[in-house]
Length: 128
Image (cartoon, rainbow, N blue to C red):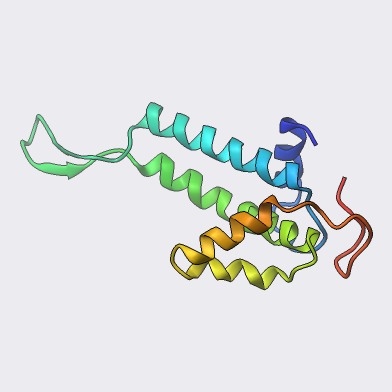
């Protein structure tokens, strides 16, 4: 799958938690999220505490666009993660292992890097 194809596929399957997603689709999406989040952070600011020059008061500035981006892309990211787990023959509920600090994250990274099941599994035909 190509970079552009992965992004289009993720948005077309915005809340689709069934089926399978290839390893390349998952990692191209992850790269897109990192690049987009970095660009938004650079353009709109990272959300730092700053002194307002007019009122001389401390205030939180920026960060709204980053928060909106994260919120808008949370569901497709979760759905893609579930479909990726389906692709290696695991239940989507395993995504909740990320709630275990550090260990859960490492386990998911290892699983997301695994090759896809070659044939059909309980979640359907292999992803393209």
